[in-house]
Amino acid sequence: MFNAASTSSFPLSSSSSSSPSSGDAPLAGYGWTSDLAEQFAPYVEAGLLPARIVRVDRGQCDAVLADPDTGEPRTVRLDTRPVGDADMINCPCTGDWAAVDLHARPMAAVTALLPRSTAIIRKVAGKRSDGQVLAANVDSVLITASLAADPDLGRIERFLALAWESGAEPLVVLTKADLVHDAEFIRADVEAIAPGVTVLVVSAETGEGMDVLRACIPGTTALIGQSGVGKSTLTNTLAGTAVMAVQEAREGDQKGRHTTTTRELFPLAGGGVLIDTPGLREVGLYGGEGVEMAFGDIAELAEDCRFHDCGHHTEPGCAVQAALADGTLPQRRMDSYLKLQRENEWIASRSDARLASARLKKWKTITKSMRASGGPVKR
Image (cartoon, rainbow, N blue to C red; front, side, top):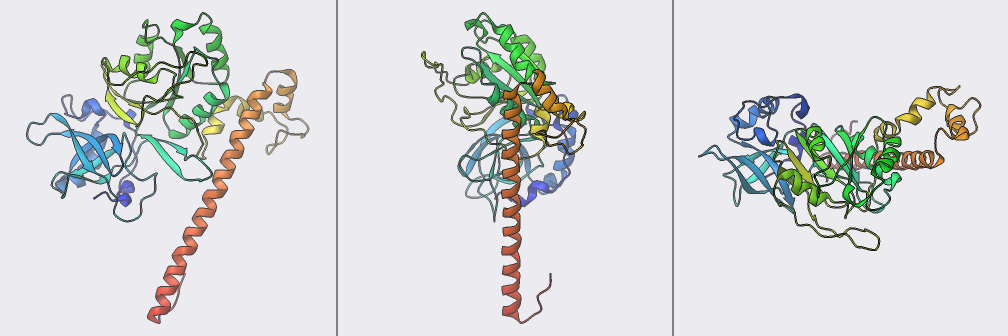
């Protein structure tokens, strides 16, 4: 059975900086590297096999591994039910590298996960402060927005913060270029709110921009965005075959219909793999430095403020307020920045409270146990 504690047994390594362990390694096409092989060595001694999780269902998952008899990649169904406590972040996720026991009963099972090089984590929907991993071990996060409707710049900023926080490289792709005549103007607007990020205009229907996109996504790419922006069509085009069903967006408002219902990993025609994800209605951030990276222009302005701890409100010599006054920094962007900062502060406060509660629960258990045994209680 899957042991959540094993996810931190080995040091982290970046999948993008390693090379496949051999040119014809069965799992090389799925991202297997010499570094991963080195990390996996203790599991080999235990008779376990490496596999990459390509799809997760409740309590089970599909994973690709090298067949012990033929050496060829094949997909197997695995049990992922945890032993002991395992939160949502440490449970198996699409993109994870797993140690698999094919002889487990009643069915083959995931016994441990290798440490993740990157992970896209969002806050779960609602008032809870728990995190949910959308995809693991990705090199690029492909943020999609449709040109068929006015892109929501605030939502793209939110996706960018999510992507930067993952540790992967964000890339914005504006889809359905064949439906508009002002794509380059829209791209300029998006580039203005995505400093340091490549913004591409593509059409899966006509092929416009697709060669450039393919060249920008080696390794493992995660595809995120709202429903109806063309993620499934883009996935099919990049995969070179119809791996996803496609539905048309509504004519009136171009709102999408949910086509993708789970996160699934597909090999791409030109090499590498892509993780397609369901359309995201709610994109809650889970803390970290992603906001500061997504709003690098504001951080750069803040370096010229008179006071190093400037709050950018009424302080004298505030370079951010000066940029707002002369129009260099749009008020909409500043409002978006402050909103995401408040979300991060809320998550941090809830996380601290959760950790404090866990510590208190632990010591109550220890105290109760020691009193029952008549021994001293030490901290």
